[in-house]
Image (cartoon, rainbow, N blue to C red; front, side, top):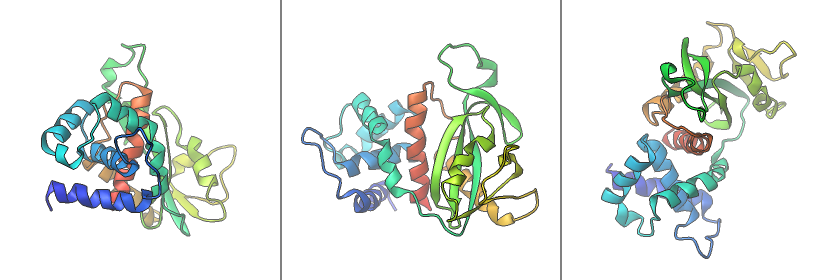
Length: 239
């Protein structure tokens, strides 16, 4: 499959879900085009400028009304909520886990007042950055998500689990346990038990291999918040 075929197939799948969204009278791009461009940005796994150079150099004919670079990324920031349409439905069993996103090298911590990352543990090592939490159903499709700085405890994402009470039993590691009490649908799994929850590791590895999200040079909160939903939606497309 060529890249043109991939972009065409991606646009078709997106348009099947968003064809009912109207186009603003003054907009140059249809909603399906905006979402497709956001997914391509996540799939490419590079910064804004390299992505825009690649897009305009090789695939401008596919997007003849492509706006200027800064306007395009403002569109992605404004309309990232459109990715909520693609969230999967809960199933009987689910799994939840977190994923560390390194924003800067630990040696550079505290050098800038605009730093958004915080120090936390990820995969048994210290990082300065953020944390993405994914709630998956039994097929590995994303039901819900949230993000925070890396110093936030995993049990602070229990509100995601509570949203699926009486609909899904959620498996997790012991880091999601809270002294104040756990949701009734949370099943804590000690190491070596309930290996079915390792499905989440497959999904998280796709974020690393496909989207290169583990090291993301985003210096501002708005940029990170814009990029994360597109990466999450990108994983839904590749499954």
